[in-house]
Structure formats: C-alpha cells, structure tokens
Length: 282
Picture 1 (cartoon, rainbow, N blue to C red):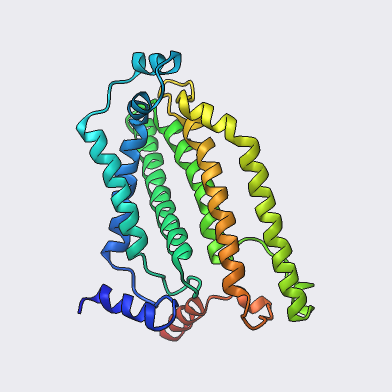
Picture 2 (picture 1 turned 90 degrees about the horizontal axis):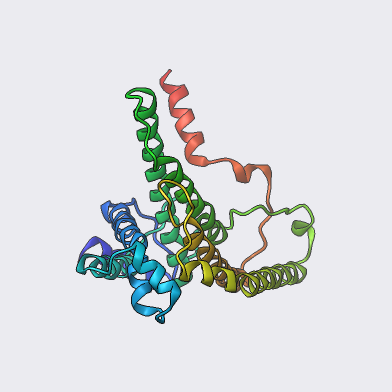
C-alpha cells in the first residue's frame, strides 16, 4: 500500500480527522501546476469569452484586441480543473494546522496552498524587478502591476484559509465565561451574520462583477492586466466559500468541549523546543 493510500485509510478510520504528515513533493507540485495552468487560462480568458458570449459590441471589442482560443488554451483550462481536483483530493494537513478535516476543509486548505505559491511568485517578481531596476537600470513595465494583481488574489484567497483555520480575529474575554449553550448561541449568531454579509455582498456586487468580467476590463496601464475583470468576480466566489466554510465550522464545532483560551495559546511548542535545543547546545 502506498503512503497516500495509508493516509487516506487513516482519514476514514479516524472519522475524518486529518493525519499529521510531513508535506511531500505532491503538496508543493499540485498548487504550482494549478497556478501555472490557471494563470495561462486566466490570461487567455478573452478567447473563451468570445466563444461563450452572445455576438455584440463587447465580443467585437474583444476580437479586435485578442486572438481566438487555441489548443494550448483549452489544454490549460482543462489542466487547471484537473489539477484543482487532484490538489483537493491529495492535500494533507501540516502538523501546525487545525485538526478537524472534511470536504470543505480540504478545499479551503488547498486554496491556502495556492495562496502560499502566489506569495512566493510575488516575491520572485519583486526581486526580479529590483535587480533589473537597480543593478542593470532596465526596469520592467509589468512587474509592479503583476505584483499588485497577485497581491489582490492573496488578500482575497487568504480569508478562506483563515476561516478554516479559525485564525481570524476573535475576542474570547466574554465568550469563555459563558455556559456552553450560550456559546453555541453566539456561534449561531456569528454564522448568521457572516451569511448575511455574504448574501448582501453577492447581491450588491454581482452585476458589476459580471459586467467587468464580460467585457474583460483591464487596469489601463502599459502592461494592462485584467485586475478589475478577475478580482471583482473572485471576491464574490471567495465570500461564498467563506460562508460555506463558516457553516461547516459551526457543524463541526457544535459538540466540542468548551476551550479556555489563555495567553499560552500563542506559544508555539515547536519554537520553544527549538530554542531550548539552541540554549542547551550553547
């Protein structure tokens, strides 16, 4: 039996609790492959919009600026979907991540892995620009807008991972002293507020997001990335996933024993052990 099969067997035997594993190459490879395929398909999205949109001024405007979809474009779109599904299926929990595990958690954690890859790519772009600008005195026209574009995705996607990890800002001063039934009531109220916010954000932003996406609105610079056309719809997608993750968190945490939060929660045991070994070696 392979290592992944053993991990999946442990997953079902433990009733959905994710096994603690050391991240293997596939944990890095899948989000990288997805980012590459999805990035290509996203950059060539106008080619697909011209196919699936009704003929009209918008399609004519896109046709004047962009080429028709090629076989590589279709392959990239299909590969992005395949890599996303495989990534969700094969993602594993790191030792310092939240212990509970389910279908929604797998999706959120894989989105978190994608966000980490985007951050690494963003750093590489910034370093590349700094070297060209200050060493060779030949700055690029695209690095600043590319960094801004990727930073927007990081800002949006990281919220889903934060919700799954329960790492968003929470105030426990009053919550911890409440009885369990009242804590559950507070959890329900907070989930309802999240759902309400997601509903009105989706309802109010759907029209603008679809319009910007349909006409593939760009940033209007020399590089001209499609920041409005991509980030506006992505906000609606992610806020919907955050709402679903909030419901999953409520269901999963319903029967848990109450946890008393202290300042010690912010202490990383691994970091303490590492410092102890360093002090002992000195």
